[in-house]
Structures are given as C-alpha cells and as structure tokens.
Length: 297
Ligand code: 13P
Ligand code: SF4
Image (cartoon, rainbow, N blue to C red; front, side, top):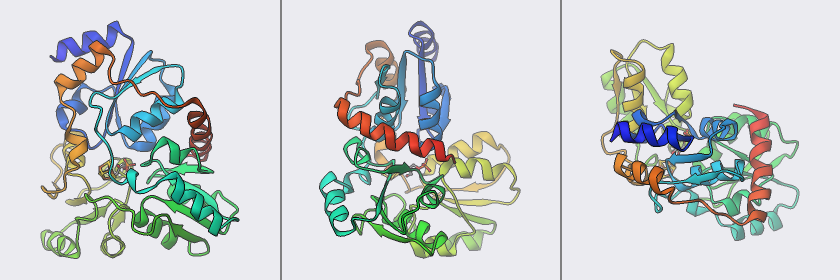
C-alpha cells in the first residue's frame, strides 16, 4: 500500500499533509507533518495540483481557502472538530453588537463561515502575537475559552471576551490537576497545550502548541509529561528516540483517528472528498488567514 500511495502521489503531483495528532502510519506517509499553523503556511507554499489533508475538516478547509485554484481533499468526510462547532456566525454577530469596538479573533479550529467574519485568525502557536498585533483593547475570541484565558493571562492589558463563554476541546479538558500530581510523581517537565483548563495551565511548566512541543523537545533532556492528544507523543518519540515522554492513553481525539492508509489511498485514487466552499466565504476567510500568516508564529 505504501508503494502504491507513493506512486499515486508522484503521478498526480499530490502532497499529503498530516497533523501531529494523526496515527503514526499516516504521519509516515505524509510529505508534511505539523501543527495547524505549519500546515496552513505549507498549504499556501505548495506547488502541488492535489492537496490531501489528513487531519480534521477545518484543516482541509484552511488549505482550500489558501489555495482556491487547487483541488483539496480530505480522505474521510466526517472527520470534524467538536471545538470548531461551538462557534457560529450568529454568535459572532451578537457579540459584535454588544462590543462594537472590539476586534474579532477566530481560532483556526472553526468553520469557514466563522473565519469569514473574523478580522484575523490565530492558531495556538501565534494567538498571543496575533492579539498583540491589534490596536483594539477588547478582543472577541472564539471558540476556545481556555486558549482565550491563556491569551488573557499573557496580555493582562487587553480584555479578552470568549465567544461563546464555554467553548472547549473535550480531549484537552480531560486533563486534570490529578494528572499534574501524577506527572510530578514521575518527575521531569509538565508540558500542556493551551486548550487545557486554566488551572492545569497554571500548574504546568511549559504551555505550547503542538509545533511548539516539537521545537521545545529538541533542547530538552529530562522526561516530559505531555498534556495533549496522545499521538503527539508518538511523533515526539519518532523525532527524539531514546528520550522519555509520558502520554495519557485516554487522551484521544476520535476524529483524528478516522483516516486509515486505505482511506488515504482511496483519496489519492478517486480525488475524494473534495472541499468545496462558497467563493464569498472563501474570499473573506482568506483575508483573515493571510493577515494571520503575515503576523507569523
Ligand atoms: P495545534 O495548532 O497546536 O496543532 O493544535 C490544533 C488542535 O486541534 C489542538 O487540539
Ligand atoms: Fe478539535 Fe480537540 Fe480534536 Fe484538536 S483535539 S481537532 S481541538 S477535538
């Protein structure tokens, strides 16, 4: 299957992009593995005719928005992100009515329709930098309330209003203070994703995006307890053999596990499932994404 997939990639001038949470067999077949920001930036740079995104739907939509003239497919149609579904265009419009002077920052874990209403998007790798780049004192920030709390802590002079107030990722809110205590007993460094609960963030030694974890682990020697989706640790073990990483076995993003190598092969063969979005939505969302990319990581 691996040989067939490689042949199809060459034949179709295709690029396969995988998020850090994809199963290892998919990561091994990808041309690019990275965090949401890295995938967005690389999607824009690729010269491929066909872009296959192994991740969840908002990642494939982002690739399509940034590459409107290329074919973008996701191997499994219903690989979604429950966090993205917390934010709706109506919620953004209502918040804008209440805070007319606020800027709207939309996390990339969101629908294309929500991005289209954003002044700028952000990822967990650049959320602080993106908010810092805005002159507005009040920022409407959605859909992740825990990432919003992280940005608020880093930038106390801003007023960050989470939209909606309780938007969260079930994988990351599954980490508790009991997990921090258990990690402390093992020793080493506790590294958490900013989608974790604020009380967990406060007790962690390092808060980082998945790409930040890849970069940060390069300079670290002691064991790491990694508070994010468990296949992030699979990736870290491949990159840094011999290093000690602890994962939480139950921290699984179900949607990130939907794509198998057979699905990837079918996606390359049949060029399915194609991402198609209304042109007006794409144009507005692209503006917000490109503004984010210009701010950098
Ligand atoms: P990153 O942007 O850190 O890759 O995170 C994406 C994500 O879905 C986290 O749950
Ligand atoms: Fe969405 Fe959470 Fe899965 Fe990330 S881990 S894709 S935020 S559900």
